[in-house]
Length: 300
Image (cartoon, rainbow, N blue to C red; front, side, top):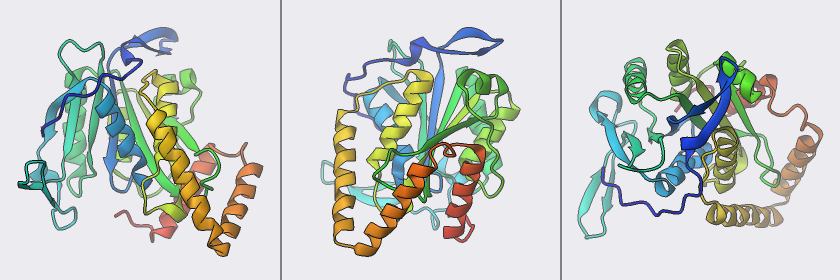
């Protein structure tokens, strides 16, 4: 996969990330891997667009691709025909790419971005785990987004969980209490946890009534939480402007749809009265169960 040279507009690189979770002492984490997959884990394309933003703003380059043929059913996840800048027709195949720092770059941030595999998940998890261990990754951050009964007009709800006890204590996050169908992020989190790789999961809740369009506001929320936990920061001005436009566009739709406007008002009242409940393990499970019921309980 070709990758153009990224614009040097990053303001803080994670070679100075500090988290206090190793034996209760402050420890600099130089090598962080941020992961997102298109598909079931990626409502509003929020998670995958967050990692794309990191890819475009940080000095990283493709360092590995996972073999496509093993993990994708092309009748399920079809390749896309496109015309490139030279007018040549190309086939874009679904896949997963690992990005690492450019030579001499002042960063140890790695990225894993691609399409959720459609088969052989256990083998896929082993292959990704091998890559993580070869790179000497000290922290894996899994980004996801789900459809939820939340209003677009309020701050996007995010929640973070970890299966690593030291990480939970240091960051003040909870262990996930969710039980039910899971996606590739859940499978990877389990594999990393069993191998002793510190892992943090950050999820954003996307309003389900606007699920057909990308949600820059949810992408922004994920990047904010990522910076909070790791110090990884990229420019946000463009994304902030897109978020304002996104919210304004939905406001306009509601003006012309009385039923939609009434529903949003109900969600706003519920959100305003339930802020203290938001983000608990029970709330996460409840949102995810509602999400699954809307989809018939089956991952796509």
